[in-house]
Amino acid sequence: MRAIPAGVGVVHNTDFAFEAVGTFPAATSFAWQFGDGSSATTSTPTATHVYSQVGNFGVVVEARAGSSSGTATNPVTVRSLIGRWHGTVTGHTVVPRQRPIPITSFDLTINNAPRPATPTGIVELSASWADDAGCRRDRLIVQSFTPRPAAEVNISIESLSLQRRRFLDERNRRREVRPRRRHLPERGSNLPFPDDAPVSVGDERPSS
Image (cartoon, rainbow, N blue to C red; front, side, top):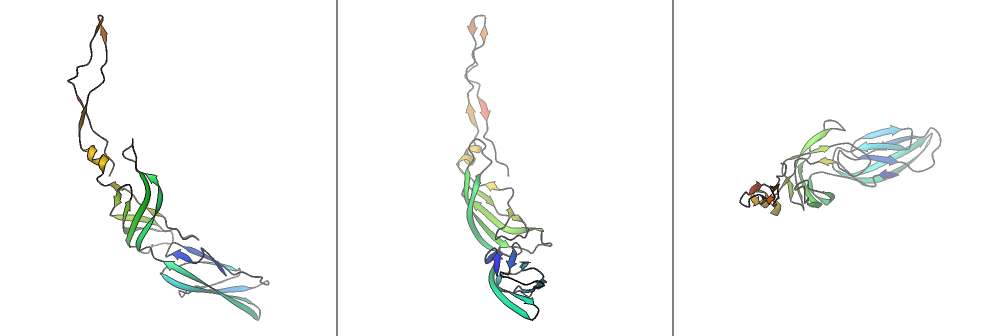
């Protein structure tokens, strides 16, 4: 028997796809035990299952054809979302627009992960996000539970805020700049703008 993904998944997220491997005569039935108290019977050598609990499970399939039968087992591990996740990401901040900061790595700490109301539901996780660009998020983060045969998790992190960095310090300073001299011909004379007319320009502010 083989499983997709091979051996490891995430609770509520991974829809394991199991397949009994072999040559089976016509009218063979397949009885599946998923190790968490759930079972299924199929007429094809395939079955799927989403685990709602964390742990190590032994999946057993029995192929039955008349008076003949055979069994196979495959262990799978189901992991929790709760804990600290570290990974890499490709992206950048949206502010400041003229010099965005690359984001290459992140730390995500999930404190709780409630069970979704439906297999394709959306829930709010109590979690915090930090990355190497200085972005932070210390509130609820939204996750979309869409079970599929992969050990992947899709999480939506909105309204990241940038911590106090060098360019944010500059943001709060108003600076004075002088416009370029412009020459306006009038009666053969040059009338430049005066040098004592400063213009205040503030740096852009990131969105919260």
